[in-house]
Image (cartoon, rainbow over all chains, first blue to last red; front, top):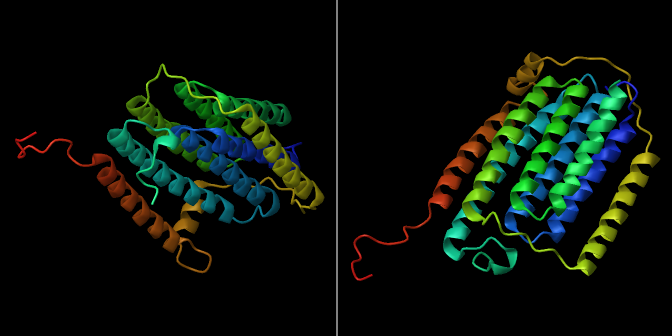
Length: 105
Length: 174
């Protein structure tokens, strides 16, 4: 654990990061920007897993293992999202949310 | 000393996260995200999980950022500026986020965590042993499932991004 830093301060920082990500997810109109916001949200949750593991259950490693799995799933998700964005751009020449109706139904 | 490092890291992370969410240039917002991810790796170093910090630096800062930069360069006109959302929508979203943050903070500060003072160091060998152990509490099954998931994601990404041929060679009427 970090000397002199309580768990409350770290959880405050991660909550602020999470809600910055939520703000970007709602206000942005571009698919790539939305992807960036999702990365912020995922990272905030990963820090929570790691910090709670370190501060409350220092003898176990479950939080670390789960954060490794979260990172792996996030990498897969990003690769798929980028490929979908590129495919959409080839078809309709735009990555704005309002132009995309092909995948709606 | 650690306190100063933590506070400066937290400040850097929050400032760059806000910049990455409201910046109007696409490429700059990706680079700001890179700074946030590096700051998170710094926090992992501070709480003594060196393996996780290395993973964060290689996969996030090395892999995902490069993927996103590729997609920005491939699909976006760089000189184009992103549209600003309406002021009313911005205010409503900020209010909603602040209310949500308030609920989170009230819950966190109202809860009594029984923190265990410790100075344990985790070696990479322990993480590897736990990942591959098939006894109670081992993670061999999720490990294999994640490997299959990554393979499926890779094949799916190739198939989706390849798309259809835009012009058929045999069709000479076009």
